[in-house]
Length: 255
Image (cartoon, rainbow, N blue to C red; front, side, top):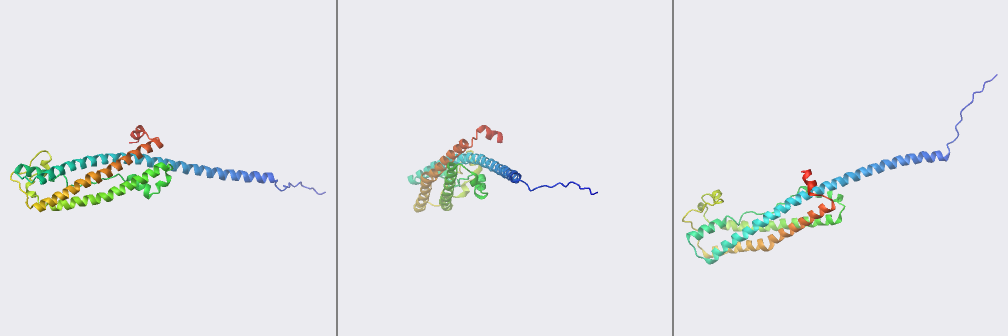
C-alpha cells in the first residue's frame, strides 16, 4: 500500500505582503537618510556657531587694534604740528633744535593696522561662508572685508609717504646727536650743541611739505578709514552676538 506524505505548498505571496516588505525597506532607507541628513545638519550648525564665536573674538581684537592705531595717529598729528610750527617760524636756537630732534623720532615710524585674520581665512578658504545662514551677517562680513582691503591698500600708500620723508630726514638730522634713543623714551634729552646737517631753506621747506602731506593724509584719510572699520567691526560683533545668542559669559567659559 502506498503511503502518501503530505506536501507543504506555498502559494504566491499576496500583494499586501509585497507592499509591506517594500514599505519596511523604504522606511528603513528613509530613516537612515533622514538620520544622516540630521547629523550633517547638526555638524554644520555647530561649525557655523564655532565660526561666529571665533569671529567675535577676532572682532574684539580688531577693535582694540583700531583704538590703538587711532591714538597713535592722533599723537603723530600733534608731533607733526610741533615740527611744522618750528619749520615755519624759522627761528633756530639750541633749545628749539633739541625739540625738533626729539619730535623727529615720533612721526615717521610705521603705524599700520594689523587685523586678526584667523577666522576670515577659514571662512574664505575652507568654504565656511556657505554655512552662514544669516544674510545680514554675510553681507556685513563681505563689507568688513572690503573695508579691510581698502585700508590695507591705502596703508601701503600712506607708509610710502613716510618712507620718502624718512629718507630725506637723513640729510637733515645728524644721528650722532641721538646719544641714547632708548633712554630718551624716559626723558633723556639730545646732546648739547645740536645742529642740523643743512640750513638750506628749500631743503627744509621741502621736508616740511612732506610732513604736511603726511599730516593731512593721517587726519583726513587714514583716521577716517580706521573709524569706518571700527564702526563696521562694532556693528558686526554686536549683530553676531545677537543672532547667535553669544553672551559674554559663554565667551568667558570658552576661554
